[in-house]
Structure formats: structure tokens, C-alpha cells
Length: 111
Picture (cartoon, one colour):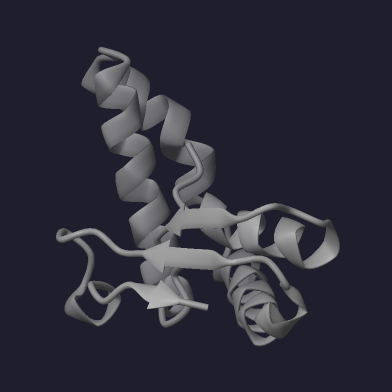
């Protein structure tokens, strides 16, 4: 369900030796509102792939939709802190963004 695993992969690489890392999509410029919307959209799409009914999807996402923005503000802080620590990674890494991401995310970044 979690669309933003790239940031966790970067955090792992900061704290542990790795050979190399390629990640897709790190939401570094998203507002807490947009983070919540993006994760909700991803979860809904994933549940549709599971062939769940509309009613099942609504019920399963109810607790997510009720989650306060404070959680996403904390997540945004984690993202900014993690992205600011990429100099700790001594292995080659690449961050790529897909064509369906916002235009500011489309350009690949080699860090």
C-alpha cells in the first residue's frame, strides 16, 4: 500500500552499507495534503487490482481517510531530513521519476 518506499530505501542506504541503489519516486516536494491524497489514490488503485468492491474499498480506506494531517507533516519532515542526509551514502544511487508524476518529478537524479 505504501507508495513512497523510495525514501525508506534511501534512509536504509544512509545507515547501512549497500552496493548500489535505484529507487523510483521520492516525494520531496509534496505538501502534507498532497502526500495524503497520493497515498490514498495509490491504496485505492491497489485495492482495485485486488478486485475488491467499491464498498470494500471504502470500508478499508476509512481509517486512512480519517488520519490527521499531522501524520503527513511528520512524514514530510522525515522526507526532508532524509533527503538532506544523502551525502552519507557512499555507494552509487539513482532516483527516477515516472511520466505520470508531476513535471517537477520527471527528471532523474543521480546522487
